[in-house]
Length: 302
Image (cartoon, rainbow, N blue to C red; front, side, top):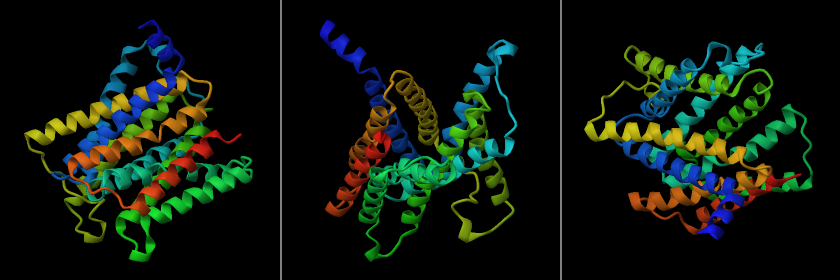
């Protein structure tokens, strides 16, 4: 037991990230089950509402002086982070409902590749030959997953957008950290994730636009099983956030933790098979593997 405990202590960040991936994949499972009853928009609402309520309670419970430590001054960037993050979740949950769980997660996990490109162009980060090789490898993986010779599906476009929007949200967080506390940044995302879906569902009562049906959906009350899935979705989302935070806090080598984060592609593919997803073909599996390798190289580049 002592040897096991020593091993665990030395690899705590890896353990935390594996737990985060497990919970994230389970979030995908319940999003898929819930997506059979209600719209992706409503799934986003249920994913964010418990976190918002718990965070507000935690902030209120703190002494007034310790609630926030913000320099402030960038409210539009803060709002942008919230909105773009939620748009990313909307297209991600749409894909979870419409394609295999493993492929939906693979698309979203292209975010680090997009982040590297955005950081190069907007933050002036250096990008060596290995960086560009990683990006090319990632795009080759995307092509293999999409297989465009069979025509682009809405899920392919939404998949690319889920990774791109997540990357834009992550890049904006890097800029916001200098001006806002992590609680403020998380609160802005959770507020957007609750208020935006609510506003769009209200708008859907008055606007009939079939072309925007994934964004303008009327609120539909889930059945008893659906409510259970909704509660589990919210709780698992919180567990995921908690363990991701712990993983990065417990390591000095963020690249290793970021590499381990690709385990949720494997977990979600296995969970998807249990839910009845077909096993992705050889080309798609090869593409998924390339995206994992590319993401690992991006995460560990010097």
